Length: 132
Image (tube, rainbow, N blue to C red):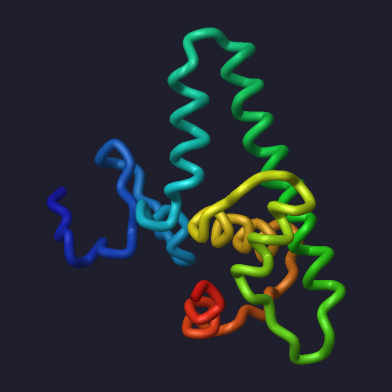
């Protein structure tokens, strides 16, 4: 059977025979860079146990950092929004780790999808101005 690529633009085809529709754009390569790094480190390790430890530690750290964001969101005043730079600074202070904006976006996705908490984000302009 011949598939027309335009008909399956929003689908993912695995091994040329399994077709999945990615309604939420979860598997977009541009959006999964952090996940890709975690999986790559897992796969690059030759030994099983160190490989599992790397994966566990990466997931555990992401979870802990996400919990910090959850607490911050719960303590927001009405109509107050998160400013990315301040969240990055708070994470650095609490966890002694520096993160970049792409990793923060990854953490926001964890908060929204795992913890089911909507994040009241400030606009991109506000976030940009806060970095100046």
